[in-house]
Amino acid sequence: MPVPARLFILLLALLTACRPAPQAQAGPTATLTVEAARVVAVPPGVEETSVFGTLRNPGGRPLRLTGVESPAADHAMLMVTRTDAQGRTGMQMTDALTVPAGGELVLSDTGDHIMLMGLRAPLREGEPVALTLTDDAGGTHTLQAPVVKP
Ligand SMILES: [Cu+2]
Image 1 (cartoon, rainbow, N blue to C red):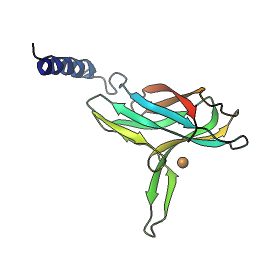
Image 2: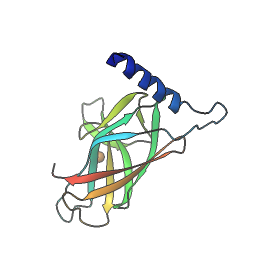
Image 3: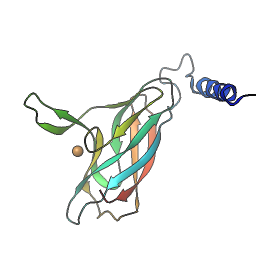
């Protein structure tokens, strides 16, 4: 069988597997994958930092992330970067970040990102930091992001 046809069948199988049960409102927990997740290393004494990376949603519906927490910090927040009418760019908290169906959401220092506030211990380069994202369907998504220099 030529490769494209096999790939198509594989994709079809994945789509079928992801289809929610007809009567279940929330459906099964959606899948979220992450690439190049990283926590920005900060000097000792600095108690907040950012988390970047690429979140991918292979599912057929948008994945709306509404919460984040980490054992490494007192608070974790979903953030957006906006430019106001005066041209000033700044970040602000948001209630949700959406990963489009079959698409990705890039978390970066110039766009959407996650912030960790009140770090409970100094971050050490290379060490993984656990993060748990929750979606509005009640699903949880845990990932590990290593500490890297900016
Ligand atoms: Cu921020």
